[in-house]
Length: 306
Figure 1 (cartoon, rainbow, N blue to C red):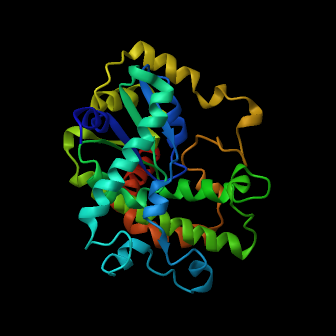
Figure 2 (figure 1 turned 90 degrees about the vertical axis):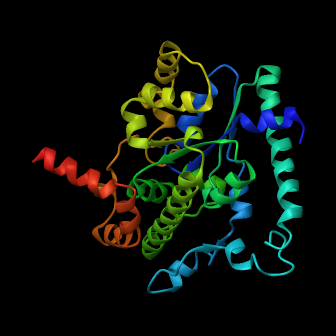
Figure 3 (figure 1 turned 120 degrees about the vertical axis):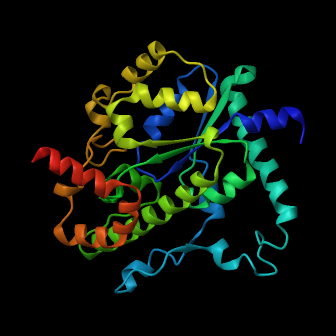
């Protein structure tokens, strides 16, 4: 690898976590920083981390099956493309491909003035592989209460929503409950995967950003991200960026139920999901919600309100 390639990889920052966690909003704000390139949803992780079993398993089984990925199952098979035996061949080639592809898009955006490349990757179940390919990259772990994530996806899977045009389907009746179970399993798996990758990454090259805290004080959280990624950006500019991307500033036609920018309001799952859906969701996500600190945070809020 040439020194220029190494330098480019060092400027790479992954935004990993769960979809519907405010990642689009965060990426748009970061893209307004001079010299910052923004790569939106390359879906590398979905190719490298194909789900097994497929989501139909959540409709067919009384109890949700254990979620995993194709690579986790096949990695010891002699002819599986991304197996362990030939990783000395495919790993450097895959890294070079990803690096070249990102550089091409980033250079179109920033030219020679590029200081950082932010990659919002929705397929975060492949976090360990991505970070192992780029150990010198930065990691922003964007974490949101999984119950709000599932609630947001249920809204997206309704007729005429933004997601229908991207391959989703309208989930009605029993289909809603199956979708709740599936999305709960996906959030739990991804959160566990990114947590493990985060804990194994260089502490100086990582930041855990909670959506709820980003919503509460965007400038503070953007400043933390800039510190980790080596960007020297003053609070005045960050405040101007935050103001231009406020949810309340979006045109009414671009926000609300069925829109990609939906509510920006934590805790909406309590009123949007049925009791049966909430029970199914928490039965699956409960352990991971507790590990992520959301049950503790919720208890503190209830105690403070009382």
